[in-house]
Image 1 (cartoon, protein in one colour):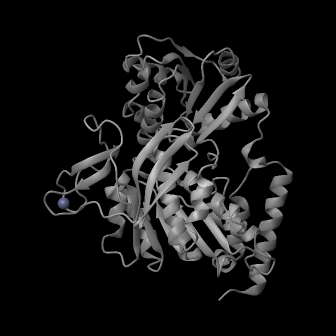
Image 2 (cartoon, rainbow, N blue to C red):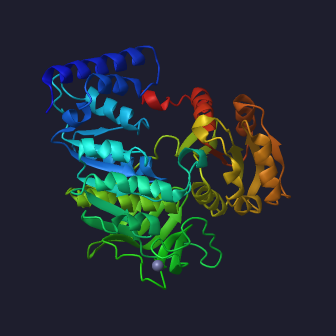
Length: 458
Ligand SMILES: [Zn+2]
């Protein structure tokens, strides 16, 4: 049972620390939560009691999927709590809920959309008891944070085991994600792409090639990207499940977005997604699936997906004195390949910038760049010039040279200011692919010269 005195003290301390940090312009998102948890170990359960909560987890697309759901709820007039600033571990989630509660620990909002780190799921969900858990995908991520992808999968499963009443929205095309439902008591709804995407003959599968149940190599009736698609095990019969919500046909695809035909149950609908690239289509279908499963009107989210703006940093556009500059965060081979295939599929001239740091938040191991398919862009005749920047600019330059970028110069930019001056002179659009810490610093520099607000002030 909650102790009302402890609760009030924890809420008060959380709000005070948060407001003090904001006054000091510190972006700290975890300290207020840690303080609250120290005073009242039960605080997160108390301040989330009675709320309808959707949790989004998985390697890639958490932020965009959460934003799509939240955007739809907000547009429909609901009052929604969300952890926007990327505070997706237990202290950050605790801070979000606690600081938005009343001083007596009563939630002021009815709904919440929470992006949760895969490893933190088992700590967060038993406290907030979500109605729906969405799992986007499972790819090999920063090696020195979680180790292999199977470990990440098992961490998610530990979280699911603690909330058997939560409905799972799982990516049917991802054999690892779909396997989360094996022997789990939870109700499950599957979403996915019921249609092949891209070149079906040259698909590199680096994760999850072998059956999770018996170790036999999967067969695929079609591919969408990486290990996602119509998988089946020829030996034990483990296979892609039928989808409740799916993309059936991609009608139009451009750098501004996509028009697709979706199936919701048995109903077919034309849907416009205001973001480009196949991975955003996955985010959209995951968001619709979660929205519908949580009991909201699908009309609302279908209407709002057309004008959804991309999440912080994941794909963001700047106008640099008339030069369109688009930034796409990349942090692992699968996400990087999606960004690269997006560039290679543009069909128009561009410059590309690759920024690579190796700081703690990036994961110190940068060897993943050798697993990503930079050849797609290096050998694209529309690539007119390339820059590399960051702590490991020279490694990046070497990687591109091995990608046979013989037709273009690969220039090292010493710092953000130098790069911005060079981009300003470009006569074609510029695409920047930074990893995490390089994105933060470059985004701040670009924000300063283009007058775009910092994300945490937005
Ligand atoms: Zn098998």
